[in-house]
Image 1 (spheres, helix red, strand yellow):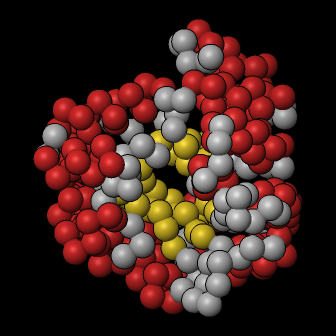
Image 2 (cartoon, helix red, strand yellow; image 1 turned 135 degrees about the vertical axis):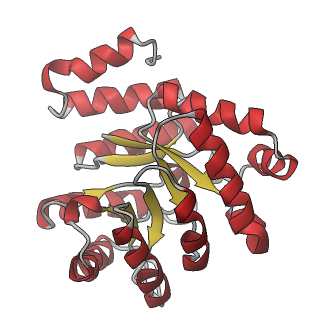
Length: 264
């Protein structure tokens, strides 16, 4: 189960303030804490800064790479920003994200292939974001077709079916779960991922909702998630779910996480 640590995102007030202040210590601690908690990739996002995004993202990349040897998930929808910052990346990254929108697909995908990156593909087109299970699966198939034609291996594609807040779309979680099952069963070789916290936006007890949805998603085949690995209860639920679903041979990952003190 591949974990992308989500915490270094400029949509968080504390991260935006640290970026503006060039607070290396704060960002370094965020990166190391996530790495130590079990993240496989560290997401870096400066999108809240709009016109200054590239310069802030360059700084984040430099600081995080000095703090940990975990590879980066370079998080921007802007092909020009991705192009500008990729030369600074030391190890093959993950890029978040492409869509079926031609500008993003054609602008980012060649860059990703050139630097041997993994790619997150959102079930989104120029005209819509997929809401029904059928639309999510259809767009996922479109992403596979487009990326394979460009030369990206299926193993490097992580499809995010998009889950929307349950407070505004009661069926969103269920549709996303159905889509994960359909994608993993019908598009052999690809991966699925999820920006987990969207599901609970605007609701009380968000962490409980996030944990519950994550366990359900793992049961449908989800094999990656964008989440906060320092949330021990969430991380514990993930490790237990993977184990229960028979994807942790002899329970060794669960036991290692327990011995490392990562479980709550």
